[in-house]
Amino acid sequence: MILRLLFLFFLVGKSYSNELIISKDSILVGQQVQIEILSSIDSYPDSNDLLDQFSSFEIIDFSIVDTIIIDSSKYLKYILNITSWESGTYKFENLGSSKKITVSEIQINQNEIKGIKENLEISFSLVDYWIYILIILLSALIYVLVKKYLKKTDKKLEIVDKDVKLDPIELTINKLEILKKEELWKKGEINLHFTKTSNIIRKFLELKFNFSALEIPTADIILKYKEFNEDDFSIKMLNKILSSCELAKFAKNQPNQSEILIHLENCKDFVINSNNV
Image (cartoon, rainbow, N blue to C red):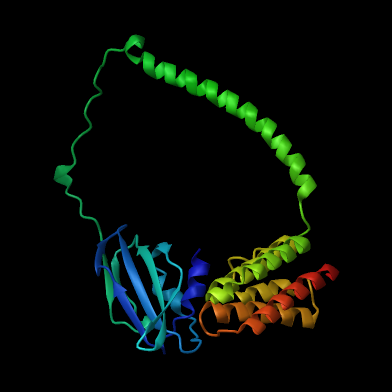
């Protein structure tokens, strides 16, 4: 998860206009604080030291990157929730902000800590708990029946799965054909189209070459792919396909219908040619 977050943060550089909004500047250890980052995306920034900005925090949750327009300029909007288990004051100067978060230790009043009381003795009778016993017995019966049913179902599903399981190449070509018929670009959803295209190709690489490709950046995918295929043309084609998806996803490029159709054909050619690997 952190690698994915850092990959998204690489879009935010020190030399670009950033606005940092922090929900509260003082928290206790373990409390959460929300950070909203608004960054200009006129061109690709380059940043290698953003890891240090959040090394003292645990990232609880983060939103997807959202592209917004303010005064005819495009910006990336990103929201994340973080917490820290160590006290201290943390600044975010590398994000172009002088804001900071102060994390304080939880103060414990020793006078309020009371001793452990003795256990209370209570009378016990099965009659008082007959409803609970009945629920337990019924739950056990239902569990046994469901378990037997699932075993039969699993055997059937296993047989069906072996019969209908598709080859990764055939499965990926089918997905690309379905995506083409959706014609998302005609609905103004170019970003969504290229997001789906990227996921389809990344999933194909996982199925075909058995390495994780959905959660790592393009550069790492190319390095991993070279371990299976040393063909320079195939490597360049994969890099071009994934890079084009990223440019469109982050509003850096808005291809027309003809360019989109050519991109889909390039994806199919790459998948088909991989059969030779």
